[in-house]
Amino acid sequence: MNCILLSNTNIYDLINISYIIDYLSKKYINLYILIENSNINFGKLFFNNIKNIQFVNKDNIINFDLYLNNFITLKKEKYELIKLGDFNSNWNLLKDKIEIDNMPINYFEIFYKQMKLDYMNYKIIYRNYENEDIFYNNFQNICTKKYIFTYKLDDLNILYYKDNKYDIFDPLININNNNKWILLNTDNIMDYLKIIEKAEELHINDLNMLLLLSLLDLTHIKCKYAYTKNIFIKKYFKELQNWKFIYN
Image 1 (cartoon, rainbow, N blue to C red):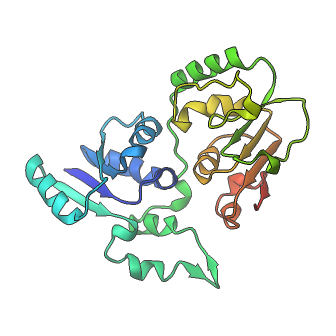
Image 2: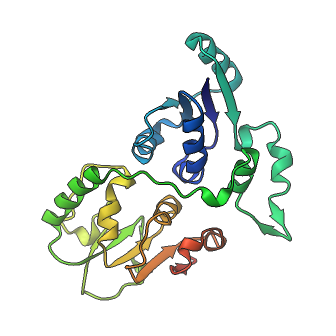
């Protein structure tokens, strides 16, 4: 039996449902995941150790039921269809319970309860260390001194760093028009994990990256700053307790 998973699948979602995906991949012969085309490369790298996953582009699909019926008919194989989040017919009833004492809870817990899985087991990450080494070695050819890593800090005026002790590296912007910050020819945040682990400080202004880093052991980095408007994210993930949160 094969499985088709229809769920929320941006990067933040994929990280949160990683344990569900790992569980389903072991339960079925093939696991088909309908996903936005822009996130397929991330999915392939994030789940690179799971060989029976196939990502199917869900962009521009208007009627998912019709599409899936045609998909199953063409494949001529047996499938179990699993719908999570707002794709589930019971989602409107489930999300009514998303607030407890006026405090929003992490709605991914509902995904896991639907699958009868323990949400606390979700911490799974498959790293491509060979890939990371390649990008880190290329990076070392650029950066010859200690550095801090920033991500999506469009306005450096909010940066909690006012010293000249370290270089500043952000893969998305050219810091201070410094020509040495050349592109590393990747748009996949998974490729930067070793570069991040070797940084002196972290300054992150992106929920996807912040959640991804919650899966890593970064206790050796003492100065870690999260710039966010989400005042609940620190409650959701105990791994972020030793980050300093700047609610910009």
